[in-house]
Amino acid sequence: MTDLTATPHAIPQSAPAVDPFGRAITYLRVSVTDRCDFRCVYCMSENMSFLPKADLLTLEELERLCGTFVRMGVRKLRLTGGEPLVRRNVMSLFRGLGRHIAEGNLDELTVTTNGSLLARYADELYDCGVRRLNVSLDTLDADKFAAITRWGRLDKVMEGLAAADRAGLKIKINMVALRGVNEDEFDRMIAWCGERGYDLVIIEVMPMGDIGEDRLDQYMPLSMVRSRIARSWTLDESDYTTGGPARYSTVRETGGRLGFITPLTHNFCESCNRVRLTCTGTLYMCLGQEDAADLRAVLRSSESDAPLEAAIHDAIARKPKGHDFIIDRRRGRVSVPRHMSVTGG
Ligand code: SAM
Ligand code: SF4
Image (cartoon, protein in one colour):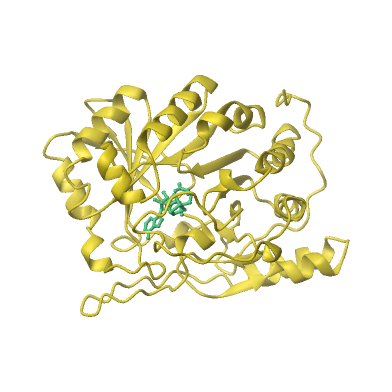
């Protein structure tokens, strides 16, 4: 087992990454694959084409890139995708990154997963230093689950959650609010999460990628969700934060935390401390903008990390002040053509 209490021997820090608006970049999300064993209706079309495997960074390259970000001040790493746990041998990456925690250079290593493979990996994730994870679960109804995810099975996810509980992993459920699909389930989900000690975050559907369906059919403003929830539950304001974009309340009746991520109706950019790396080594400085930097070419051009650090500094110097998500209500057009599975949630 990885000894996370080992004496920290912090590695020398490189110049910290701070953007032109004075925001220190301390949070890196890494999409380790664009592939997935589900085809959620709001995320992917049924016939997705994926990147050729040859375009992907190797796990060793991803580890080297993450290590460079850690030296530049990143304190929190989240692995996502696609479905991160479907990438072959991904545990070797978790193990490598967990060493930064043991050495005192990283505060947290987390993962966002659909839960389908958690039963297999929960213990190992804990062993690698993961203590919290986000599991996406939009419904507790098996048929609805199958309809939303197209290829997923609710019982597998439930087995995964039970394994994660046993392993001692703290769980946060991500639920995307979908008009006409799960809008009758908020109360049930709050009660269920409350009983199990899971945090719940409700996410507004974001206009990312062509999914072959009309976005406006799915869109449901969280202001509406919140006022509906408030009919049955008492929501106390909370200043709890995980460094992410969610704004939290405490549900008085359950004592559980309830977060809302509202990219379209609430602007959270001013406190943004994160950047996103794709599995091909492209760095996006903002989830809602197209500007990106190719770190793969720089990474492969030199064994020294100095050019990589320079490229990261250059990229972060271009981090925009905020995003441009717009749902064009007349035409239902998508404002960011990239799928969420490319940059991760
Ligand atoms: N496969 C993993 C999962 O589902 O948790 C990780 C990747 S997934 C892209 C990350 C998160 O993004 C999930 O919670 C998912 O529900 C959310 N997501 C995907 N597409 C979205 C969209 N168009 N709008 C809002 N959230 C979305
Ligand atoms: Fe896969 Fe996650 Fe997208 Fe669903 S939301 S299709 S599980 S990447």
